[in-house]
Image 1 (cartoon, rainbow, N blue to C red):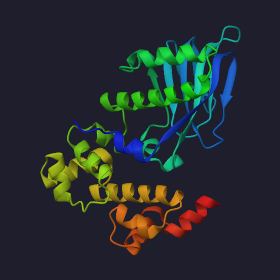
Image 2 (cartoon, rainbow, N blue to C red):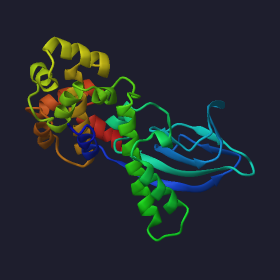
Image 3 (cartoon, helix red, strand yellow):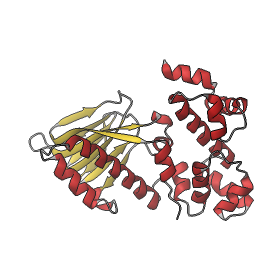
Length: 275
């Protein structure tokens, strides 16, 4: 079976930084400032979750709450006893343009018991969070990154991803073509060769891809290639070198695709990022 997450995580990483360990009592608010997402683990206690002042959820069992992109939210717990939390900020490389971040719903809540294979990691994470061992912060940060990967697995395996890349990666056949694009962006992909990878006819593949992912295979491939180019530009690499690595025959061809995708030339985009 193809590894649906390997190329994604290799090219577009995510880092976690734990900032809360212990009880939260009463009302606690987290803002959407700072440009980061959040991953919260509720170990015990009852929690009301509010967005924009309205309660959207009441948690009564150990659960995970994922906010991939910045989003203001509020927790309401018992003023005296509170609820035990371990919380981390999430920094997706490329921010909102990170393909993993962009493909996830704005808010995800999953009972911890439903996340397959996560029990040992969660047990270790909670033990470290509420102990005083050396290296605790570094270990917790890495464990949160592992938990995030397990959540992504869970969402894909349970079909709980919205239309987009992760929905395509959840599809038994489309995922073969999508992974091929991810792992070989430099190749001269055509609709025929991608359909062959998916084991589908050309017409069925094109229709199924559009209905599941929300765009044509060609548009998806361009978006992936431009995303790789953006990552390389952030690293200070030259457009001339990048072009061949992401499947364009010349710097001019990449520039045209880049502007069609982003509305800015590579130079303008880089200047905007630096500003």
